[in-house]
Every structure is written in structure tokens, then in C-alpha cells.
Length: 67
Image: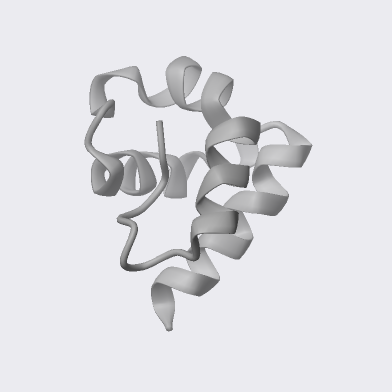
């Protein structure tokens, strides 16, 4: 599970997102797995439903993708 393509997010942040957000991704966006872009798109409107640690990493991922 990942949140965005390797080109969009640093490898360290990508690994952190995979570790911290895996359960949230399966709980909220199982249909999007394994498509990384689809997982990110699915999680955006569900941000408030993410666990605290995942939300923090998710916000960093979104910032990286916007750059």
C-alpha cells in the first residue's frame, strides 16, 4: 500500500506512509488498492476519518504531491 507514485513522494516519506497508513487504507479505501493514485484520491475526502498518525503523514504526502 502506498499513497502516491514514487516520483511524487520521497522514498522515506513513502515508506513512512505505507507503514503508518496501511490499516487506514484497507479500512477506508480497500477498493483502490493497489493503485497508489486511487488510494490518495480516496483518502483525501476521508481525511477526518484517518487515524492521527496517518493523518499527519498523509498531510506531508499531499504537500509533496502538490510540489
